[in-house]
Image (cartoon, rainbow, N blue to C red; front, side):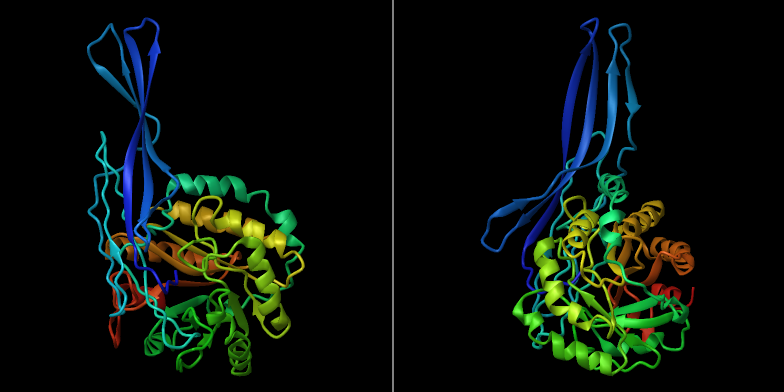
Amino acid sequence: MRSFEIKSLAILASSLLVKETFAAPIYETEIHVVTEEVTVTRQLDGSYATGHAHAVGTYTQHHSAASSSVVVVASTPAPAAVTSAVVVPTSSTTSHAVVESSSAKASSSSSSVAVVKASTEAAEAAVFVQTSAKASSKAAATSTKAAATTLATSAKASSAAAAASSSSYSSSSSGGKRGVAYNTADYVKQFTGSSKVAWAYNWGSSSDGLSASGIEFVPLLWGLKSTFTGAWSAAASSAIASGSTHLMSFNEPDLSTQANIGASDAAAGYKTYMQPFAGKAKLGAPAVTNGASPMGLTWLKSFLSSCSDCTIDFVCIHWYDSASNVAYFKQYVQDAYTAGGNRPLWITEFQASGSTDEQNAFMKEVLPWLDASTMVDRYAWFMADTAAGGLMSSTSALSTLGNTFKTA
C-alpha cells in the first residue's frame, strides 16, 4: 500500500444489531445478535467518512417459558478477545499518521486492529517513501471473512470478458518468484545470492540507486496525477534499456487513500501510458486490494471490461489479513486468478497480522504453496524495513521473517 499524503484519524468500531423474534407461545423468544465492524475516518477538513459495515460474528439466544435457562446457538464463530489498538510507526520524520481503535464489547468482543500506512511525498516525483506497520489490516479498507465471501461469490463469473484481453505470457518464475518491496535500495542486497529472489520494486518509476546482482527492478506507474505521469515514459524506457522486462500500473486504484481511480479512467490511463510499451516489456494490471465490493476483484473485473483491447500480461493484487487465515489467502488467490481471466498473478503486497512466530508460521506454509502454484508468477512480502513485520532486523541484517522469505 503506497501512501503519500495521509494525515487522518481512523477509528475501527464494532456495533451490535439485535433482532428479537417472538415465537408461540409469546413467552418464548429468540434474540439474534450480529457483531459488525465499521471504519470511521476523520478527513483533513475535520469531517468524518464512514465505511461499509462488515459482519464478523452472529449468534442466537433462545429463551423458553418452560425453562429459566437461556440456550445460546452460535450461527458463526464469535470473535475472540479484544486486541488493543496498534499505533503505526512511521519511517518518515515528516509524516504523522495517527491511529486509534475502539471496539464496543458485546457478549464476545472483536479482535480487529485498525492500521493506517502513511508516508510523505518524496522530493522526486518517481521515488516515494513507504511506511510499515506491525499489523496488516487496513483501516481504510478493512478486510474480513465476510468481505472474502463477497469476493469469492463474485469472482467466479469474471473470466469471460477478461480473457479476451489476455496476451501470451511466459512465466518468469523459473528465476525465482520472490521480490523485495523496498524504500532503501541497500536493503535489497541482503537478498542477493538466493535463487528464490529475482526482482524488486519501490512503488516508483525509478530504482533510487538499486544495485543488486541478479535482481530485476520493476517500475510502477503509481497513479494518474501529473506528479507520476510526467516522468513515466522516460523512466520506463530507461529501465527497459537497463534490463527491466516488466512494468506495473496504478497502486490500489480501488482505495480512496491510494491511487483512487475509477475503473474506466484507469483503463483510459492505461491505454495512454502503459499500452505504448506493449511488446517492449510485460505489462501488469493495476494492483487492487482484497477489500469487499465495489473494491478489490469487483473493481478489477470492471477495469478489465473497460480495457478489453489492452495488452495485459499479468494481474497484480494485494492481501492483508490475519496469519490464521491461510485458507482465505489461498481462496483469494484462486478467486483473483479467475477474475483476472486466468492471467498469471503478481501478489505485490501481502502481510499477515500476528506475532512474529505466527507470521513466520504463515510464511512457512504459504511460500512453498506460492512457489508451486501455476497461478502465481511473482510475489512480494510487505516490506523490506526494520519495522515489526518487516524483513530487516537492522540496516545490515535480515529479521526472522527476512531469513524465512529468502530461504524457506
